[in-house]
Length: 166
Image (cartoon, one colour):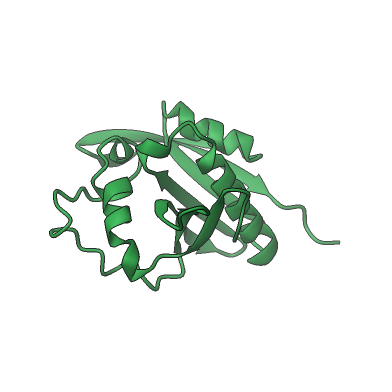
């Protein structure tokens, strides 16, 4: 998948350092994106990521370097949920919105899901804005759905639906 500034494709063995820097070691990212923190590159277990068909790299087209990730999960019937995270060095540049918009097109029109959900920790206005810019709308609220970083978290869910084929 390609956008004006990004490439979205499978994660590779060579992405370990970029994934570590931009996701697993970025404490700002880990405040809102569920992932295990890695203290050092050597201690970071990256082996589960390459070759998966449910986690994708967000890459800068100009360098090919991984700056974030997109994932698809909870695939049921004609619905799924997505998650996304991008390194804090790349925040407020429109990259996340660009990547999520293209990923939604892929899921709705190539993978033929009719509904795609995404959630955010209540209060994460940046993630809410990304969803709204991508055409997603409020779906439901889930109080204390999970505990992350020792805090019970409320989740707010947004969704986008594709009209049925006629």
